[in-house]
Image (tube, rainbow over all chains, first blue to last red; front, side, top):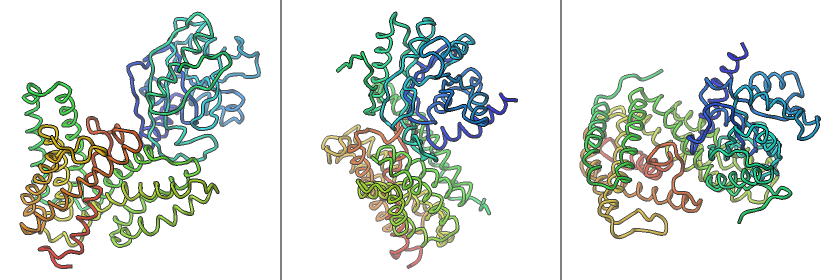
Length: 223
Length: 318
């Protein structure tokens, strides 16, 4: 029943919005992992981001996609909790739990173990449209524990203009998703995060935007 | 009520376009043997996109006036969306942008209702005031003038100009003419697009002297001359089947459409250059965006339609 509702939700609402109202252009689709376990990492400006990323996949794959979101925000009400966890299959992070510890990311580990594609926003917040927040290192913890899992960076341009934080309605803007080459665990956190941020900056440049990853303590900025 | 009785001349003209495209398709392997591989690949992609555009446009035209008007409205939506992707706007402009999108169903709704004069006045006279009010909503005056100009110009390019194509389809006077309203629009579109294609092809093959390299390096005087000649020839050849024009009137129409088509193309090129992009979008493989494809119709459609409405011609004096 939930699977059927999910299909209807995507078929009748999400896909018409993403492909009809916004228009989605995917560049380098060949880099997109067809099956899990894999981690998609994207910049975050809008509630539309996860829906746009999910729309890159055929409808039959919906049950294998798991967006990651903050528990405190998306589980505020019963309806929000149903929409996010059941309909969108969101993995909720328990930010209250020990930071960086196993417990916070337990849901993510489980999804990867089930062979699903995690959709992760390392900025952790939508923030100001077009402005980056520093990447959090949760993705590094996941990659360290699962060095076999590809981490695929995706830069999204458009959703932040179509529906920025605080907006109540969608204004049509074409969206571009630039998919990068898969990255793998490098052996330590600093080099892994550096590689991920450099890859995202390169994708943002390819998308023709001035977006760049925000400074993070210890990050080297390539010139 | 759908008016489902396609004009015979329109059907024949559409069949002619399909035949022409089929001939180009058949010539593709021969071209590929002589041309550079990248050029041949681009040409094949362009021809494939032409098939899709001709099929969509032809189907809309055959399905009657209402469907044609709605289809042109959809083109307006796609063009406006591309324009707002390349034009700089502020977050505070969101209400005005939403209002600009709402102008599309309003403008084409007026045409569907047959209120021609209301359509002519709606975008240029009513929308500026609506936009001004929408721009004040967020109380951010810094940059409001630039935003008002940017958004309004987008409406003129993407909604008002293509709207005149729909106005032609719905022209009551045209019922008595050989091709009807649909024939009139088909005539304009074929002359403009053929001129555009010939200008591009001749420029690639024989282009030497550039017209205005700072705006559009691809435009050559040789291409322009060939494009104008193609517009004249097509306009004169198609006139008896699709329009009420005499031979002289058809030649004048061809010159008008060829020249304004070239200027519309240049205008869009300048905006693309300002925005630092090559194509306005990626919707039509090989061609770029919708705005890239309809740029030659942007000036041609209103001027051609206006000429029919206000100048005396064989279809009847105004």
